[in-house]
Image (cartoon, rainbow over all chains, first blue to last red; front, side, top):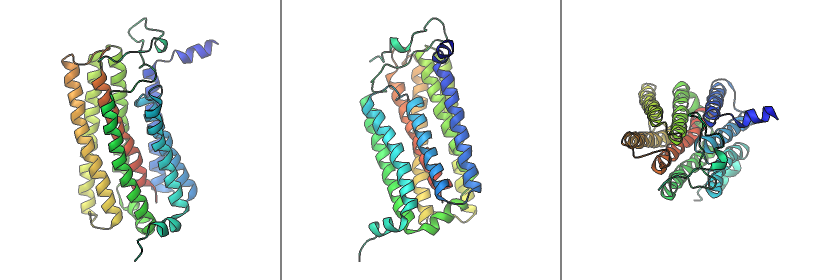
Length: 105
Length: 207
């Protein structure tokens, strides 16, 4: 119980420090991928996941939508579900999407 | 209009380090800023859609494009914007605690990060030019310039809004009890950061 009380008492501004540190680390991970990894489904999935997590952290913590109006929070978070999903779909089905979006002569 | 605080979320207001968090179910800032934020996000969503469509039609160009760009500049831009967002969040936290001078200092940090971003992006455009990368080099770089320059402008005028928040804080316009305008500016700034969180991997990382 004492430990739980401790975590509840962690000041909000200290949580912000931790979030900033995580965001920095994830950015550097992306940079490492950009410089070294060959394109693959795994790399694409990691990058898509990174976008989703970073977006959610900024929306919930920096933008303080965590306990805000649920519709605004939902719309903002939806952006960071759909974009990573779009990245994965583009990787998986490029020819199909190209056919779907080709202008017919 | 004052921004009320949640007593349930502020159980330990017994010293200067105690914090107040915003009340549940509120609309941060005001309704108008959210119309603006969702309009801006829709605009960028259209750009991302164009990016995805162009990518499936020119897979090779979109595989080679990120390799030709300056990854270091992209990473520095990302670190600067995330840090600027962090500074804004810290400033909001300080305003709620009534620590106005500290909040102003955090916002000056945001301005510094924004200027750093603009300088790095400007240098990156010159670097691109020296490598022979221009707007009409191919469709990948056309999209790169369209997205990044559009975002560049958002950082510039968003910086103007942060300067306005600093002015309002200095002149007593925002207090621990009444800071709706600053919250609106903070949300707008975070939106600019969020857009870059997407642009960076699309242009510099994914191949």
